[in-house]
View 1 (cartoon, rainbow, N blue to C red):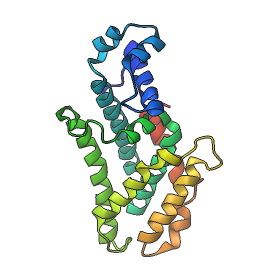
View 2 (view 1 turned 90 degrees about the horizontal axis):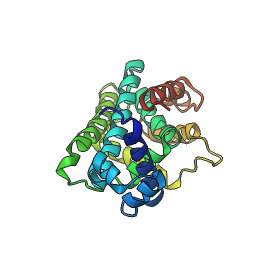
View 3 (view 1 turned 60 degrees about the vertical axis):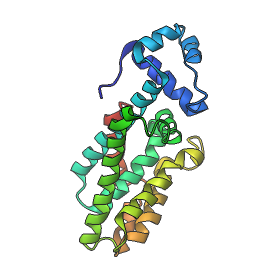
View 4 (view 1 turned 180 degrees about the vertical axis):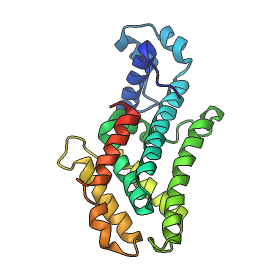
Length: 221
């Protein structure tokens, strides 16, 4: 989906910030209109409904994540490196794209059965399947222990999707350090040989640098 520009982008950015701060249900188009010095009708003209704003928020966010992950897949071959990159990306998004990350993660079940959210569901499924595939590939290659790859993926994404609740962007832990703990614990339980775990869980390592570059390119921030 093309990124919105001009007045449309201003409306969407403000909506994202309100959802991140107040939640979807308490976000009011009238409040957004007042803040931007426009009529509510202007917002309706650009987006139609609040639900459409949420759909666009989530579709933009997931598209950016997938763009970043696809770029990372071009740089890293091994499944353990790719899974580590996913975890670092999830942690770094808490600061690189904070409002959109919080808004999306806290409202992940909103409109989940809406037919118009089909594209968002496809994007989420693609991201999840990429994770399942890498864990499965690691198992087949003897890099990971034989586990249920789908359940391991649910465990991984479930924990990362909850990060918005407790992560403090102004706290003492950097997102790189948080990501390194995720890598150490999750991959530490999967790897058949932990010799390279220290390298994978290095918050100043090559994987983190590549993830930062990929997210910057994907989000423009």
